[in-house]
Image (cartoon, rainbow, N blue to C red):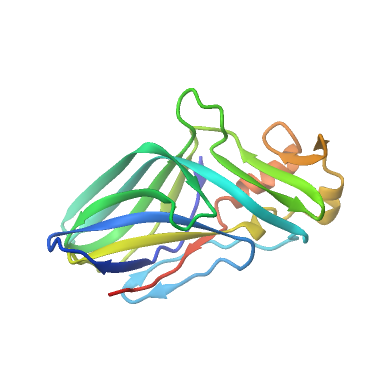
Amino acid sequence: FVLLAVTILVSCKKTSNSDTGKLSLQFNALNSGVVKTTSISDIQTSSTSVTTNAVPTGINWTSGYIYVSEIDFKAVKDNTTEIKYKSEGSRKVDLFNLNALAGDFNIPSGVYNKIKFELEIGAPQGVKDPGVYLSGTYGATPIVFAYDESGDQFEIEVEGRNFTFDGAKNYNSLINLHLNLLLDGVSNADLDAATKINGTIVINHTNNIAIYQKAKQNLQKLSDSDFKSKD
């Protein structure tokens, strides 16, 4: 079980439905930056940042994906009613494509708090792909990270106060993944000494296990989200 804590912020645009707005979830992979703790408007949110012990230099992640098999949206509506919406159906989401959709919900107008997202990560039955996959370079050396313990659940938690979903708008939650923090606690010396398979540094649950365990822990805390508002 992996807890991925992020700050959720939303962007919006008008739609013709006055009763229900659409909430969409997307990912944004970054090779730089730090995790932010942010307070936006009447939303009080927080994210747990990586404590930087040693972040190796020379890594550039260039491609990757995540399988999202289920997303649950939970909240309290109008301070009285606990609601839960589910988006099912496995999607292979390109982390480097800002137009790639992880899932969406139709959310009725109302004031929501205690907002919580839960994402279940894992490839569909019969597919042997890892739930999370990244590839890039470490200097001139190819490097691959594969979170290949399928079926684990990433839990994204957000606590919101009096956040109003307006049925005249669509909302977009863009989760930033600061991939430069994935190998926090791993030194350049560790990577230089890492086992290679056909010239590639492979980090998964059977290869370079010590590095993998640190990366797995860092998956919990390398995310935040941006906020924009559009007409």
